[in-house]
Length: 399
Ligand code: GLY
Image (cartoon, rainbow, N blue to C red; front, side, top):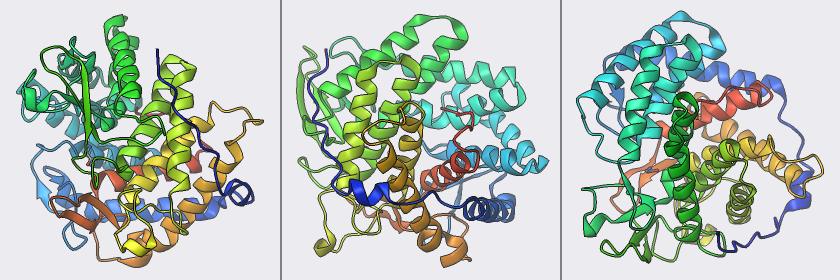
């Protein structure tokens, strides 16, 4: 059973419905520029990976130890799909060996972010070059994630030692890790991955998502009884607010749960989070880093939340009838925000010296880390959004 989650009407529905599709040449141009930038950046990130966020708009080179390193490899796969330039394939393929080493040797994998790491890397490689070893690697990652399932509370524990009181919680971001489990079921025929993913998504709807369709970042359970306890911010502004990127992870993650399960409740929940998100975006459509803020608060944007939401809306779009109440408004939002991002947020046009793609993202305000910077996930989802639009949303998803 899933609790009632309110679906707000889209306040600027008529306005968004009036926005035309982005012209193809603009999308192609933006994708082309992104691929050129990747080619230029490539030599720095063959044996190393970009840091989660840039510093002064420049990513450092780090080892493969972060939850974010797969996004770079994912960008390379997208660049390869667009350009067919074999250098991108060569490097992305090489990275799959690095990701194999990481899961086999258990290097920084004691957390739930297996989907973020292994979908845009090894699943992509399996899809694009039939790489059996990459498939096996992604299955190891799926096992690692499945092992985090907690019977008491019925959820995948995000971080820390399994069962530990101070980390007995799930987080909204984890909805994006579920596709790895759904995929593992399809590949192996083992239903357990699929079933646990569904249980986790339902528990998330009943806990970390509030009845008004805003999301806490994290939600704690009693570690002894498994009883739901309380929502808590970590990257969000406070315990009552809606962290913009968390809300976007929810939109996209739930749309993906719908794709794999055809459980209509996932589609409705995704829509509920989307409407809440869109209604709280300012005039240029790019949210402040927490949806609680308005112009007067003077806070920075999170462009990465915008592109994640765009990918989620494009995933939803595949399943909405033409007669659907919100379909046209979602398409209008996608066109409006992408136009804004390409014009005013892309490094091509606004910061050519950067080795990133998308300006004005944020990692963590509370830790003052990566504030108003490029982010590795922002760059990846910017490319995914462009790829989806360029292929008329026919792109074969890595998720
Ligand atoms: N998954 C962590 C973040 O979005 O920053």
